[in-house]
Length: 419
Ligand SMILES: *Cc1c(COP(=O)(O)O)cnc(C)c1O
Image (cartoon, rainbow, N blue to C red; front, side):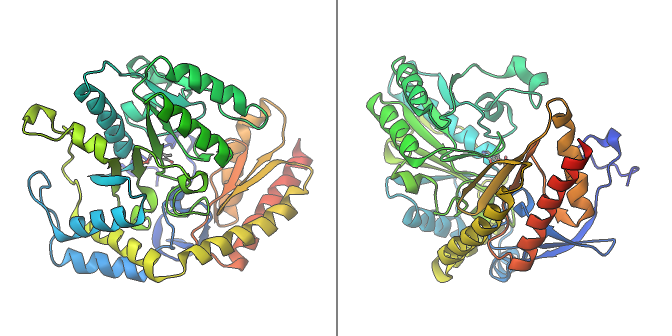
């Protein structure tokens, strides 16, 4: 492996940790070239919703691949994109009338920020500032990093990141401080507030309640500040509902979707916007159009996969599956939470997270050691520091769930003995 020219993401190659070669995947299982069956407990980094190699999605990809592979999307269109845009406007909040395509969560966020600024330019108001929530993550491109938390992940690029207003995370008991800070920041006429609804993922699986999300939305509306919901991770049922915003009765001005949009099979993203955002870019003046594109915008094969995902949501009992997985996760989390080494056990929908108690300093070493520990037990779990979370595909069975929770319990036992 070490002589491979591949440079992997978020990987320190100098540590020479083994990099398994995956040959195929099905449902919640990954199969490696050395004959192992790995349980995919994090949905291959949060993308796989209905399971790997879902037959409906695979068939749609195969059929589309034999018909139309790729076409420029500036000034041209194709049926899979038309169908997908209609399908999305039908299933998402009716206020979001427009669908702009891109390729990843990061680009959907870039588009959202550019749309917001384009809106204010059209209104003749000098508004550029973006408000963000503490601990947030919105992607790894420069703009997306700018609206995310600063840290070791982006220290090298800090001089290039634009300045934002950071609102404190609404931790339990400190919700009012968050709302007050947002109210004060909104009074200074920023362009937009971007938020991960109910769950801050990469920032550490921090959960906050729907009533806070609803109040944040009301504050933005009152001050005419655009509200951008980044549902790249929370969308497609992860938090128990199709969108996390649904639980708060919130409709954003701009909505970012990716990851589960194609069921996790192939890259695609959309940025959905209200008619007002669209109209700000509409007219006969070419200088006002939305200046954003990438080569593979609305790739037909990716759109076909997303249409298959919509068909699954329409034709199969996906919501029941999600509720069932949430309940099966809850039982196991409850048992795990009794372990003395477990702190802050929490759950939202299909996702659970716990902190492994340890000593400071020592803690920084826990992440990589846990990764190796779980890997040796044929589990794909990738803790965020000492936060271990479980976010499986909706089709995972009880036996695999049991294996995941048994291993986390065993990791806690080991930790107790070593420290
Ligand atoms: C993963 C993620 C992104 C970035 O998506 P990519 O497809 O990795 O670029 C953006 N926002 C949130 C909330 C995410 O979880």
